[in-house]
Amino acid sequence: MDFLNLANMLTWYVAFLFSVTAHEAAHAFIAMKGGDLTAYQGGQVSLNPLPHIKRSPFGTVVVPILSFIFGGWMIGWASAPYDPNWAARYPRRAAIMAAAGPAANLLIAILAFTSIKLGLVFGAFSAPDSITFTSVVVAESGGGFGLARLLSVLLSLNLILCLFNLFPVPPLDGSSVITLFMSDELTMKYRQFMSQPAFSFLGIIIAWRLFPQVWRVVFVLVVNLLHPGGDWGYS
Image (cartoon, rainbow, N blue to C red; front, side, top):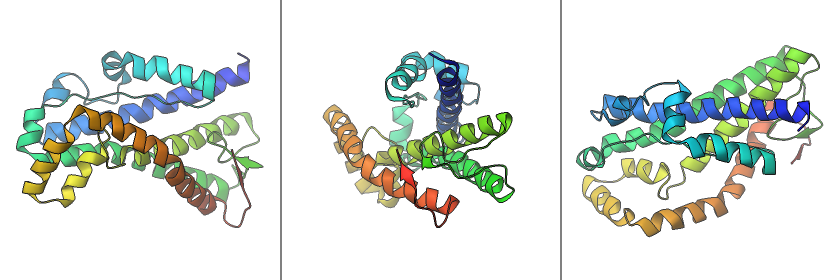
């Protein structure tokens, strides 16, 4: 692996680890505030990635590195424990806890977007010849080049994490978030129905098949907001 690829992998891993840690820490924090101390006692109410790595080493270390080596970008997972009895007693609190993870990723994406836009306004960044996950913007200077790459990855990755996790299918967060719009009785029936293990497997397949179409629309919209009037290639 040459220096540029190694630098790219380190950039992706820093962004990935921060984004996934923030996602799980948000789940854990809201659960704690709602009365479930399970994740807090496990150390997950923290932006320190170590407790999250310790809980899910395969999803936070092995899979991200392998996905970068074979695909050029990173995917993986972490998890924050919660008490299912607490979630059954307080379905609204559990739904808000589920929404907190994607909300954390949305916040990071907004901050990255704002930073990129300011960099474009003040001339620190410029539009690339072709848009990729790693090159939403570029910069000429060495330090600016690294910052442009990091912000590009943070924007792309956190949009992916937010959108994918909001699909309303188990085991993704969206399957719980959707209950915020249901009555208590319907929520109870829905949770019981969706608790069957087969639905988790089916849900992942459905989300994986539908996500590319949703992602392309959202990502092109975001790119056009950053670079209005351009005719951008996307790869």
